[in-house]
Structure formats: C-alpha cells, structure tokens
Length: 148
Image (cartoon, rainbow, N blue to C red; front, side, top):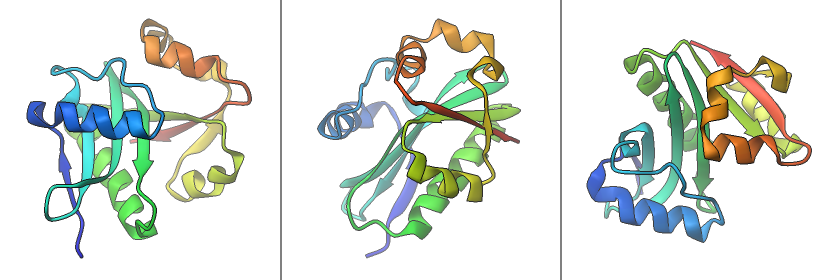
C-alpha cells in the first residue's frame, strides 16, 4: 500500500494531536497557526502513519514530532525528511536543527546531511519556544544542523 506525504492543515489538528499523544510526544506549540509546518505520512484511507514537524523562527527551523508507526519503510522516512527540507525552503529557511537523545539515530541523521553541533551553536531565538526549552533540558541530548 503506497503511503502519501502531505502538508497538514487545520482539519488535521485533532487527529495529529491524538497521533502525537499516543506516541507520548508533547503537542505544545501545535496550533491552527503552526499546523502548516507539519507533514503527515498517511495510508490512502487517511490514517496517519507518521509525522514530522518544524517550529519556524525567521531563517531557522527546529524539527520536532518525528513519529512513524511500526513497519514504515526507511524510504518513506527519507522522503518525509526530504519533503520537510522542501517545505523549509518554501518558508525561506536557511537551516534546520534537531535534537535527539537517541545516539543510535545519529548515523541516520548524518546520512540525511545533518552535522552534530554544540548546544551553544543553536540560534538564540529558539529560547522563546516552550517546546524547545523543554528539549534543551533533556539529559544526553545531541543537537544537529542541516544547512539548506
């Protein structure tokens, strides 16, 4: 069954919040105004199988809410990231950042073109986000940057 990747819209808000909550991820900052910075990976019937979001700050974006249901092909995850880079370009971004505390994920992110950076190298405007402030306080977090 072929998955579909598309930009989320206001009608997706409740289902996306429910999907993220089931994955034990926070939904703070996910609003009607920001939902268009989220991509959905769906079955043809509209069932959400994955998501990837971005908090946008001027020329920088912080990736968030990467969730994929078990059984999703690696190819679909790569396409999800590629589509997010395209969305970031459309929004005038110069770089994307992400945080992870899963060291086993580093080779995947490096394959996608992300490079490890120190927390001090993150844009200062990220400090205005409740979600990002929470991420910064997670033990053993690693930070990565992708230049567009």
